[in-house]
Image (cartoon, rainbow, N blue to C red; front, side):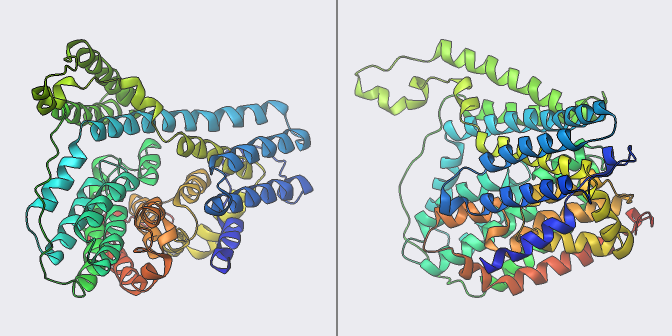
Length: 468
């Protein structure tokens, strides 16, 4: 439990939002009610950390805490009563936009998975006869370039299947390959608005334009390449046994992938050209998927007893688009709700304003953003970014990109610092552990430092001095 002590300290330092508290002269930060709110959040987040021990879904404690926090606020508030209601509605609107965006993305990922595209990628990599070192680099680059479109969790799980299939006789390859995939997935998600929840929230807030995120491509690449190079020197150049396994795509697989790309284009276009929220473009893309699913359902061939039919499994497979909505990570989506409402409550009582002054006024934006990134190695980057966005410090584009980079890749420093790392520990149990990752933290930290230096050097023009 000692490794989680920074969480409690970090929670005290980073959580809160001046958006509504600043509008009122009443603050509960030094009131027993404010302390109660803070303790409720800490207790909820400790329960989140202990999820693997208690087996209580992470959404449950934060949703309960959210309700209790706003009950305490409503009962203790002495200002204008309507401000509490307006605050709740404000945070609910923030969550609704995020929910609809992520729900569509998760639905598409589920549909692409079901159509067999990820299995086909796995079989292709296994069957090409690459040696272990080549596979190490290939899976790393796949993670780096898949993560900007998929989330880092899905990317890690897909490529972990490749590692386990290829390296079943080479535990060291699996261990190092798993570390590499986690680092690459987190780094790849940092330069795309779709690659991580943190980048998505910054983009939807309008703080950084869509194409500006790609200024982080080279810093993110450095973050991945540096530790990958260090680890690759320990990888064998032997060739694993090949396999003749096949994985045929189901009917419409490429069309579903194409619709996903079109949906991303719609989201960007709605935001950039029509000045509408991106989730509206995503929802439109979901409608396209459902219409195509209707077409597949109406035209699919019924399974028959003829053995030849089994060779055309794609043609006999129905497509239920609503099933993919139901398969979305609802625990994760509801976790976001709890986090946003909890952090919103902390902001309402005044804690975020205090934290903003400490971090961004006293320490300066650069130092604060780098330290927050390091904190994300032990605290999930989602509540951290929610807190920073609600603090809304006055920063230039370069600094907003810096916090996006550090919050995204800082989680790679420890295996428990990102969803990709936690998922990988479960998928590659016995091969990828907290301590196997910790042995290479020095190389990952070197990549972290050099990626920040690369950002300051390459993107100097984006630093105008605001908030620095």
